[in-house]
Image (tube, rainbow, N blue to C red; front, side, top):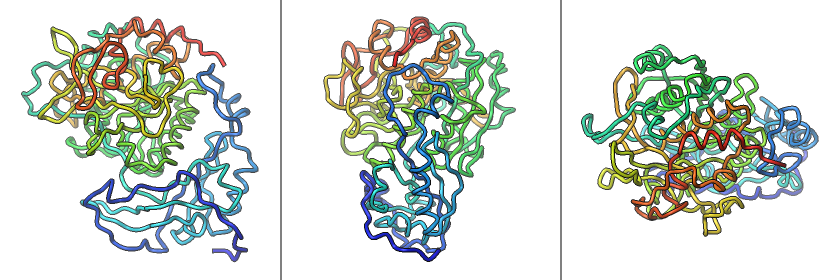
Length: 505
């Protein structure tokens, strides 16, 4: 570390308190202090020069940079402080509001003074965690949304579920058959790119091509893997994250066969999740038009600063005309905890939260709730985000989840192939890429859907209203509800609606 004059005053970074490790990982064992020489990678997320105002007409990247990039002076000030403490700059990106720093734990601690930093083990994974706030020199906190990288605990899980046994699914469909049930139009999504966010697992490109060929799907879109922060495409466990990755590819790729797919692989921790989303949004090579996220975790397991940083990234996406679809979770109203809580990032008001239904061959479509098997559509009310102005059907003051729904019941699931093994899979994980493919079809009409919430809520008639069932906390009712949102799509109507959606500034 360089010799430096110690700042005379420090201030705590607002919203930077991290939840106790015991709350998110009850069986975690403390291993003591982190070694001072441990390598650290720290992400500093800044505010934009001009606050976002949504919904709006999509900006070009050049116009976005001019209006919203973080000022060089703000980044330079923090950069000087970090370098004085011994950290080095990996990347400074004003358009992405991001500064990535590297150094030892000793240097990182000197720069940001994390409270309660320690090393833990949960199962076979060791991770760094913290239980408290962060600080910066006085006068800097107002420019910073989050400082990430001091907490490596897993924050998300994949939201897919298999049928209870290989023969348990009483009804199953190929993804194109699900799309046909919902009346999706024939546009292949040509000229569009769907970004898929993945926090583990991987795929084999040859096996993916075999799957599409066996379905009789003429895939003309490209499939590309993007490494984020050192993570990469690493298939190997058909019962683990590979199931999520390949489900996403097979649903999006067969329903929108003309769309390119860019798969962003990152580590399962707050900074990794954020960086994967930020990378996809600001990727000028692949340039996704729609992003699908099938991973998430209960809001209670996140620090407020991490949720704020992610939500700001989603605002960036909407300002650039990029739509983001996120699975609402597979564990009902409590999201796998002991009390009602919604899943993030589906709870961000700047994404399209995707809940789950059961889609029988005949009879009414109902809420997905498997009862004894434990799976049910995630939904409820955010404890962090206020209700967006356009969510008029929500009588609560907080953001309601989900916005929309689709087939998610493993008992009426999707016929997929994971690492060469045929399987039937459900979960709201399947609904996010299904909706992403539908939006890609709408975008092919020539207008980016961007943040679709406002126009969708004004046109509830374009949905199949789900009125029967519950998610073990809330019941479906006529109109929007915190179980299946507005309902499942009337595909052709949604394409017409979003294809002509010109949001005004």
